[in-house]
Image (cartoon, rainbow, N blue to C red; front, side, top):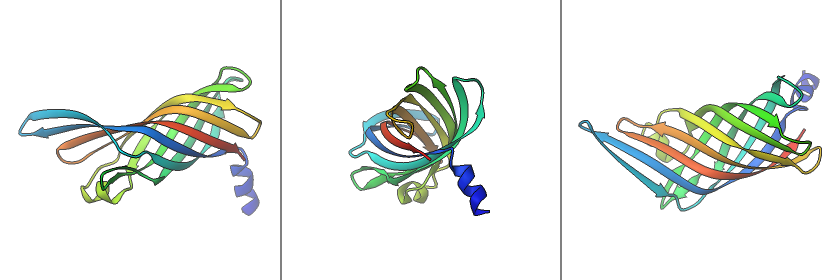
Length: 168
């Protein structure tokens, strides 16, 4: 059993990312009237994650499944905005060392501030590029959006991410 788990994880990538330049777009609807606003968030986030190949479409393209968890959520004043994301991803190799990726999945609110306001699961979307420095180490730059909603408020939290990944 342990050998099966070790072999299964031996093809995946574990990563840590730094979310910077975070912002939030909020839309409030009361009595049929919608008000939208956009705001920069004070501090970024730190996430850990893992993704695993599930299907090789061609020599240059593959499908992956993965997940990430914000161990240090973004903060604005004393309010935290943290998410766990479960996603599917497609990767396309542009060269031996450069690849592009896109992800789509579900974002799950994890910070107490969001859970206390009964925030619902939302959508996760991302896109970016990865540079493979070695066969084991990659650096990625991307753009990620996690959304959620409460009874009268829709939130879209976006950030740029700089990731460091290690292929197992």
